[in-house]
Length: 187
Image 1 (tube, helix red, strand yellow):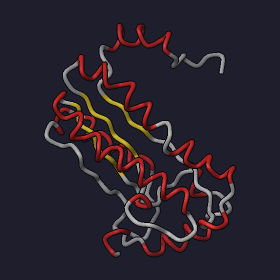
Image 2 (cartoon, one colour):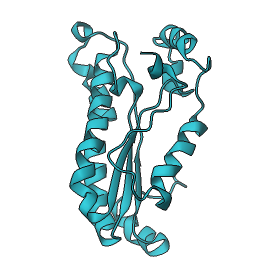
Image 3 (tube, helix red, strand yellow):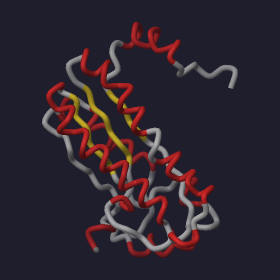
Image 4 (cartoon, one colour):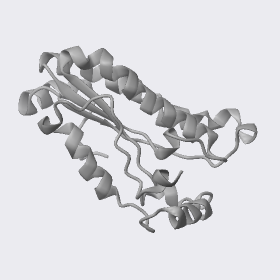
């Protein structure tokens, strides 16, 4: 993308000068492969490489800026599959358990610096990932089990992210805020 702003290290000092120290990080990324454990192949490790691995360096990278600012908020987007296992999504579930675990572990480690760390595990959200051909049938069955009887919209998750990112959440750390239309309340 020729017109896109640079996000590399060279552009960070300019962003810091314009916007001040970095005080919020939202780790949000994911792909899913619908396979059971014994069906997974070596190349399916890309689920871990995309969903889990970038969260660690992202969290680590913001700590110096947040320490200097004497606080901040890290929000890891997990999944309800990071709260419970599901048949046929072994790698995805494992990666989202890890993302939630990183938030849970980092929260007490970073609290002394005023850095709050939380996770948000969404349920079925209307994204390209849940519209893939290999998961459409499973998604339709799951949506039928959602007490609100509909798929969630990305804006609902964005709105939820605003609270832990805000100063109003100054006592909110080490927590998870589930947004799933009531699906996990049934199980």
